[in-house]
Image 1: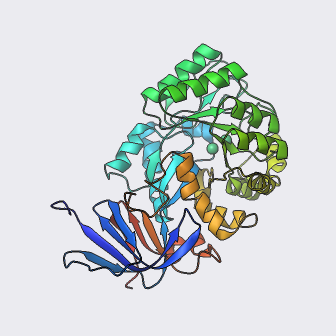
Image 2: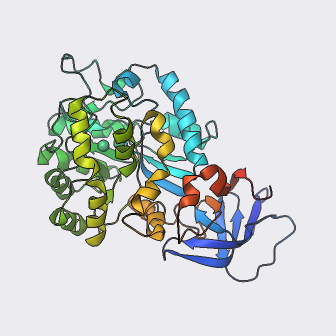
Image 3: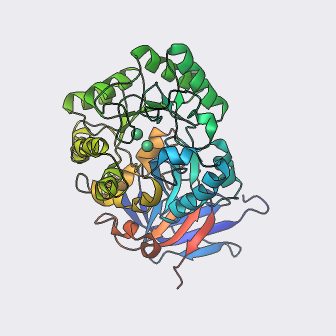
Length: 419
Ligand code: ZN
Ligand code: ZN
């Protein structure tokens, strides 16, 4: 029964990517009612006259892609400069980043800090064209941690606090009480997940990459507060020590994780944690870091993790840790987002890389059945693409050509099938 006013659409002659099984189902028909998928079938189907029919011409049809580590407010790689911009300007620039991400085929993204509920609402209301947004709000960082971007000359804690604007500057919290308050504040501001900085980083000025951040009590408090609100925590961490501590504290996903070894991957596996590698940002910064004015110390840190990124993917995969698609690109480097597929297929087959950007990401985000899968009840987010995704994901690297039809929530965003 179709509700009055509900648009019914049918995509037929489709080779559907079954993301749960990791294979194609040729000869499929997808029935869409309103913004949801009503059915996917290989049986012959009587299509009523009122339905809009899209003939995929035997092409591959993929679930809308998910990038589980983006920063849609990162209009610049200069995060301190960004924090000084008025929120209106950051928002205006974010609208472009969001639109371009959607047009690359990413119908959902998990923002790993920066985006707020205003941006999420702007997309939900159709004011901005963009991926569905799952937001973290401000990242939680200890004093001198990865999201404490204050240059050493700046002593004031307030000068760069997250209330200054919209950006990637952290909510600085020290001690269990402050950590609880910082997490609760993100929950109050509508976070879908809580981001904590559990180890050193590359773009931060004063912290050693292989150091750990936060005490175990602070990490546990962050996770406990996230779970109290039915959310989960994700942690930025590179080194085996930082990753192990975060996972033991109950963190659900490790962001980056470049330096993990087998023992660390086994700890992740035993705790049910996910790995979200972000290979493309290291590739981008290796190309451009010097030109962007990065200090020799930051470039040294970059070199340390860049070459280990693919090893981490191989280790995680071998130990059975679920690997999720993420990119972590900043500023003008956002255009490299689909390049992540090419980097990953050096360590996994194309079908698995596609699963990492669909169903595995959905599981991490506790959105299985809603996104990342073409099944009844899911959002009608899909891509009709040229080429065989079981052989190569090259079509996603050139989305303007390779994606022939893009649909989000039943709305056709772009269609060049008939051209
Ligand atoms: Zn990070
Ligand atoms: Zn990030």
